[in-house]
Image (cartoon, rainbow, N blue to C red; front, side, top):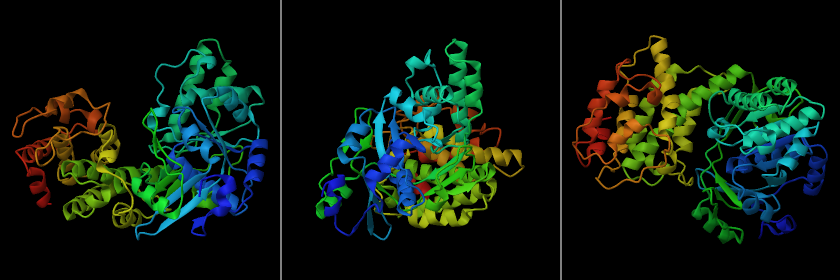
Length: 504
């Protein structure tokens, strides 16, 4: 069993096969592509390509996806080309059952070929360009001088848009499927900023700036836990006779394989803003809604029902040396802390209408986080925590401040902040050296915690008063002194974290 088109006839019935003519799909896609995706990572391969496959299987379309990778040039030669652009999706269900699905909806994949990218984007049939390039991928720093020197993914796509403009300028939707608030606005800001810089340098006409400003930039909310490829899954597949089980770490630290392991739950909420048409994603489980509903759904997930709870488990799990998120959910103290955190956050988010927040939260706490077959770790979740706190906790505190809701009586939020500061000391609850997860943009004011001894005194005011870290000045909202007290309790010596959690 090898992941090649001609080998699919040898797969056993337990593997779910594509139900469409793959060569015919490739031919139709090359002739008149409708969907280009930028960022050929694992969530794209298993979720978005999986949804496209559902549409193909049901006959809702005969056109697949063209994939483009602009950041890590090793992904395509290592996880696409050797496998004929196929992906084996391995869905790990909470009851231990495993669904194995061959995903064949990607017609082709290529990387760092701007000339070819221009050809695809210029095709009048193209309806949307979607992205999974991480939030940092939309941040525009030093812009390349001209279209001829485009480097980043968003610069290269803007070059493609210039080609589309020069070839008739049909409308198009640029759709971020990265998980952060107002992602549509961030795509627009990045593209128009680049176009204006090129115009200022005399490389493009003012009409091109007007063209990109008038394109569609729908907002979205995407949700699916997709950890890096797991060695446990490798052993499971080997037992079936599946041979393509090598896991590669690229020089840019991307983990790829022929397979992608993931959970069964997934959500895609998309603003209906597609002036050149779109794939019928609602037939593959997506919610096509107005912008306000996307915003409410995003706030519900990111500020209350999933992301802040994940972040709490990441930090607390690291301090307690718990190896996986599922193991964290066996600790009754942590589960209680999550429930308190959710109860405190829910009043600050609006009901999105399409999904009940309490139902979503119940699924997170009873099926998704406790799933023992998802190889997710506190260390992965704890990455870049300093960048997550202002949104995952600060937005809710700011809402309370602006709407007259009490803040000073919060319990879970100050405890989490104190746990995070305790984590920044670099010692676990037993006093052992703790390797902190990468957080390259962590504020310099937190450096004073590095290697702080148990019982050591430190002035937290420069940290707790910094609204850029927490979204609010914790002294102004009445939480700082509670955080200070909790931090000192947590840092008196070994076992202090566990003892404090016992009190919840």
